[in-house]
Image 1 (cartoon, helix red, strand yellow):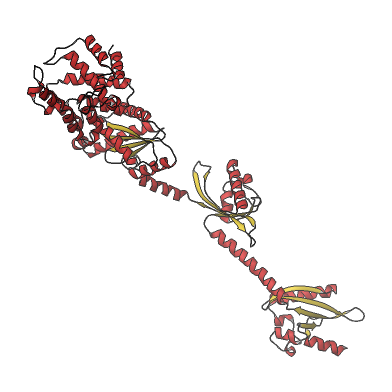
Image 2 (cartoon, rainbow, N blue to C red):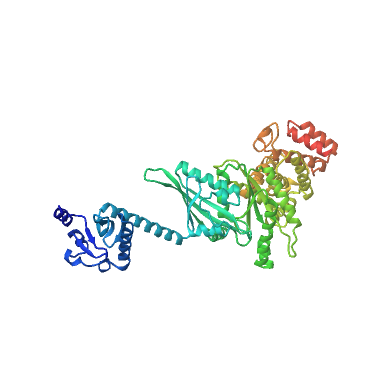
Length: 586
């Protein structure tokens, strides 16, 4: 039987050995010898120290000491150059129970080795991953399904440590956020990510102890297992304060007119588009053209010209700061966009701007800007069509300013009218004053009043092209001469229409001799077919002619002239305009 056991031990695939009480090998089988790359005879008589390095031999000796001490089987797992091994050490006792030797059986089960090696590899990967994450830029963290921190890299720990929270593991945002509303929002984001399995990208603003603001870009994604189940939330937070400042500076330079500080044309187009898309209509557009820029540049130098533009911008910003935004879209051109505004509101702003310009203090020159307003009602309408409407009004406004070049042209036309036609400047001024009063009573807008002022001042400009012999004739005109006189409306129309910005003014001049009953000239228009401004001019002009007289006709009393207007209301004149004129005159 002893030989049988010996034969089994020698041929077992499990490495086996027997040692005496001095831990010398007295038996090893072939499998054990193969592990040592030797033959059994070479190992007999050796100790652990002769086969293994110091650390490993000491471990084997300790395991043997435990068996000797307890006289019990000892099972240990050890890592050798060949991988993980399980070693079973058995005490060999005689019939009296005395220990006589130690036997060892070594398991080389590949599963154990692979498992242990995998565990070691996993642990190494975990350490490596943590080290890598620690040196990556930004705060990186992992939260469980209850939004509590499970992992935080060094940057994350430092971030909260600087804010008085030394340990965040196991805590939620409500535990660590000073701003509880912000903490609640973070946890709502986590819940959304977990429930919808979708990432979230946010910019967060933190206020530091010194009052400075820190901007952080936060990206959070769901952590899914291989079955698609959410196990938590992984996030990264980067400090983008410097990048934000750089972007803001770049945006400022891209969208701002550096000279005046107003926004530029590029930003104007973006803002207008945004207002239209957001439905902030009607959109008020106030167009402005600085007066006298060339004169200031030529007289005082470009530095003072720049100062003029800066001063005008300051006025525009101060007046519109709560209702609109100011843009410089050209050399001396400005636009104010006023969302959800009516034409009347825009004109009230214009009046306030003009008043502030008059009050503005400048040692060298007065600041002045010609303004006009239009309104965009349809989101699809091109904004530059609306600007053109406002520009036409700006042009008319410049015509009414005696100090401007365009105003000088208008003055020259009026002087020419007085010299060539016999019409006096006083007559034109009286017609203008009365027409404006009627227009105000009718509730005309500022731009309409500007048109009325120009049209009433130039209503007979066409008489420049008619012979003085006819104009100054003291006797009744022949039919042929009357027909010539009647052409003055068309001549005036052509003179004024030469300026594209004065088309509506030209029409008022063309039609100011039309009659309410349709029997006037040149087109025979009837009733409200006649432009309102032309109807106003007709009443005011006729009244002044009646009370002033002409070379061919004596002056009437004012009472008689008013009675004549009343009598002709509904035939020659618009009855409503006549009623307002009489009420105002009385």
